[in-house]
Image (cartoon, rainbow, N blue to C red; front, top):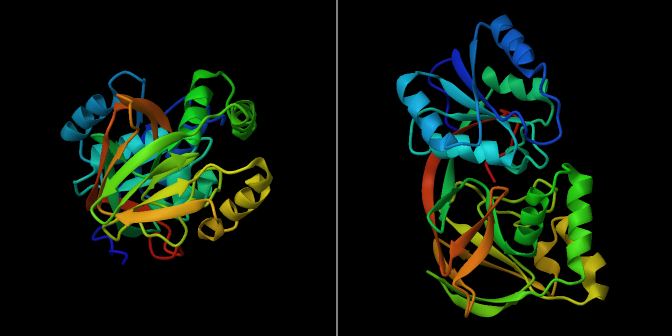
Amino acid sequence: MPTPMPTTLRHLLFVLNPISGDINKDNLEDTVTAYCKERGRAAAFYHTTGDADLEHLRAHLATHAYDAVFAAGGDGTVSLVAEALAGGEVPLGILPLGSGNGLSKDLGIPQDVEAALRLTWDHELRLLDTLRVGGRFAAHLADLGFNALIVERYDQGEARGPAAYVRVATQEYLGYQPATYHIETDEEAWEGPAFMLTIANANTFGSNVIINPDSRMDDGQFELCIIEPFPNTATPGILYRLYTNGFDDSDYTRRLCCRKARISVPGATEVLVQIDGEPCHLPSPVEVEIDVRNLRVLAPTSAPAAK
């Protein structure tokens, strides 16, 4: 359930990633400053550099008082700010400026900057669960398999935006060899090959693929969403279901609901994982745990209960 905000948000920090997505940010600070000043708020800005951003942001927040901190960037920036704020009293706001913007879409936050700025004065406070994946923080989604590979290839390239992502996916698809995974959860065990394995505390990728329909982000559990290997003839049907809330209707998909999990690839000492849009290589097995309702987030008042 939404939690009422106890006070008006007056002092706001906007954490800006200058290179996220493919959006021009030259006038962003002027736009945000003017918007906030018009409504009696004070806006400050913090620029990420790619060098120990989490440590530097935490140090800044320890010496400066803000009523809310807004992540102005893509999924990586949102995850960075969320990790800095998790477990504390200061809420996270989001100005979606990346290529995917997955968490903001799941929360019903407008994808237009000025519409999203409305959160500075009109909002509900939601308490969301977060995850630890191989010891690393995750605010939204993580996965192993095909999508993790595509995210790594995309990250290594220079082009940005949906078209670049689709191009990389098309190039890698035909030659992709699914791995076999062994999964142990607090509820059950599963082993088999998977085209993709998503660790989901939410519903939707930034690409609008609905990987985990009808789930909640504040229920104290997460889902492992498995897409098993499938023939090329099944591709259109699977894609249709992923874009129309029909994940569970395919013969090649399954979900495991749990509070903790251990995921390994037999014979592998490390695995490629993407976490909130960032690729990384983690030791196998990968331990996954949930932190219940430890992140305060500003969401539109018109949005449904947190998914």
